Every structure is written in C-alpha cells, then in structure tokens.
Image 1 (cartoon, rainbow, N blue to C red):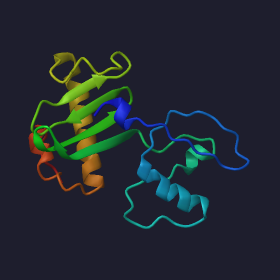
Image 2 (cartoon, rainbow, N blue to C red):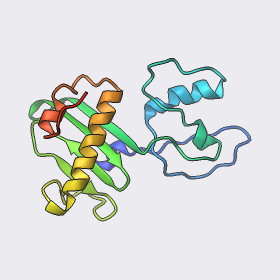
Image 3 (cartoon, one colour):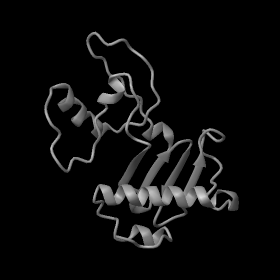
Length: 156
C-alpha cells in the first residue's frame, strides 16, 4: 500500500475561485457529497464520504485521516489489507502477514517498518484504534475480526 499507489493528487477547478495547493486529506468518495453541496443538494443519510466544500471555501478539511483497502488477489491468492494515514504516519493492517507502520516524513520510501519498534508502540496502538473506529463508522464487513487481530480490546 505504497504512497505512490494511494496518495493521488486531486485537482479541482471552480469558476471564479483562485487556485491554491492544500495538503488536507481527501478520498475519491468525497467527490460525491462535494458535488451535491456545490449543486445545493443534501447528502443522503448514511453516506460515508465527507464534503470537501470547506476546503473549496478556503478553510480546512474535515478529515484527520484517510483510509484505503485492498481486497483481491495477488501472488499469494486471496489477500486483504487496510491502511490508515494520519499525520506523518501510515499503519497497514495485514491480517495474514506482518503489520506495517511508517513515519513518512523520515522514511518516504517506506523501507523501515516501525511496527515492532518499542518506541512506536503508542503510535501503533493509536493508529490501530483509529482504523477500528473508522471501520465502525463505515460498517466495514471485516470489523468483526479486526480488533482481535490487532490485539485491541473489543468494545461496542
């Protein structure tokens, strides 16, 4: 789940709005409620995505993290993993392999997995909890197994 695969620039152009570069988190799914906002329509209840309208209006985005998922086939056969990017850190949950934790400021090519580093255990736990919280928010089908596999206490 390399940055080059999941961190894709989003370009938007609105008439009469000067261009600027922002580093806020966004998801491709966020385009749906954003377009509805721009059209003056309400986002349907239960939508997981978040409108990017605050960013377009010159403010800050509403996301403090972004997630990505892979569920499909690779050289090992059927494979599943989830990722959360929060601040400078990225955590990758690999149920059938080693988990990964990267400090993207110090290690942009993601060569030094910090998941086993004793100094990073609080960060690892915080990102695991944030990923589980996002899985709950989006009613992720794998939530029933994730807390056990991440060694987190199960709570409703």
